[in-house]
Amino acid sequence: MVSIEKQKSHWDLKYEQGLPSLIEPDPFFVFACEHFVGPLFPNGGDALDLACGLGRHALWLAARDWRVCGVDLSEVAIRKLNHAALELNVSLDLFVGDASEYKVGSAQFDLIVMFYHADRNLFPKLVSALKPGGLMICKLSVRWDTDATSTSANTDPVNRNELPSLVPDLQVLCHEERQVRDRGVVEFAGWKAIPENLKIQRCS
Image (tube, rainbow, N blue to C red; front, side, top):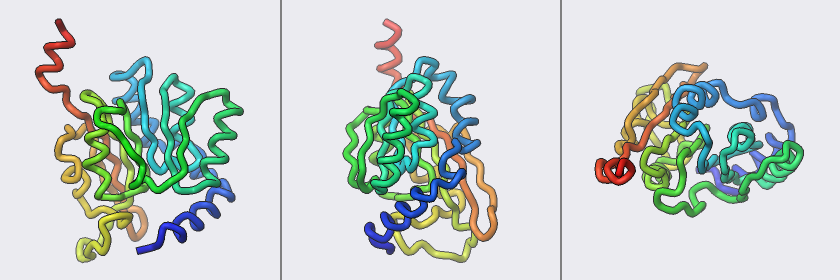
């Protein structure tokens, strides 16, 4: 497994370069926000962008009245994101650190966004951190070769059709997988159902 320091150096270099693909919101993120997030949360809410990078999604949400927490291992990314937020006059809560060490509370967020950070150990914690009625939007690399075996529980690509099994408590709103060169990608949106007793309380 690649050490945290090597990962940090790798991403610091990428974020110093500021590639367009790291700055523009992902098309699937925009699609999911238009079709799922917007209808459920027209006035925004509390969001977590895990492994947020340069904040392409955190800034998009903050500009639409979301209260956004951004976490990334790269100090370079967080520094640049903080500067971008000041320029756009939006507020973000930003943290430098490994996503696996970020402390989240139960039922804390209406929306959790995680793009290209496939830490299997994180998913139960993230589902717990979703409020009832909350959404998770993920886009991850997929191991497309079905003969390959997993060597790590953390940042390996997920296997084909694995992601829904990592979040069994979420109702699947969107799950699409496709091949991209020698790997694939999975695009996923899931909803945390509202327990019946909470529905009754909200209606009374």
